[in-house]
Amino acid sequence: MPKETFDAIDLKIMEALQVDARLTNADLAERAGLSPTPCHRRVRRLEDLGIVEKHVALLNAQALGLGQVTLVQVRLVRRTGDLAQAFERIVRDIPEVTDCYLVSGDADYLLTVRTRDLAGFEALLRERLGLLEMVGELRPTVVLAQTKRTTALPLSLCRPTARGDLA
Image (cartoon, rainbow, N blue to C red):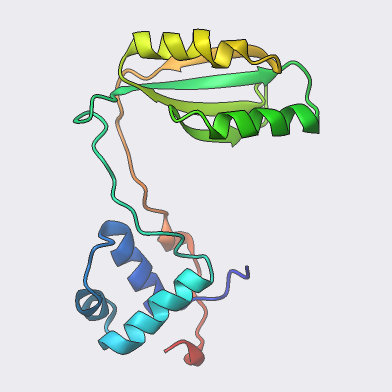
């Protein structure tokens, strides 16, 4: 997907949607300086391009009793494509793993794991992650406090193009 597929008005729309995806089209259009019909077309276009992937609700993990966050560095026994693919398939099916990153450095992967408490994390290690044959080493880091959380991308770093055909 080319980066030059949006303009400054699209950026206004994206900024507003990142703050509140439940905005009505009329409210979104007002914030973007458009009338509702062109605004709706732009949102659909951003969705079709895959820039807007989906609209979701962010749930409060603490309120749901899922406050334990643990970051886990994973080193595979061997760095081969087959083992990596198998690991990634398995991890996709573990609901407690909310993020999985292929990384450089000492570890092969970095996982974000969300459980009720440390006992829940320990059970996950013993019953699932620790039993995976392709895993050579697991290095957990317990998160003591979250000091920043955002799902918003830094759109100020994006460079819009001045294209007149986007209205």
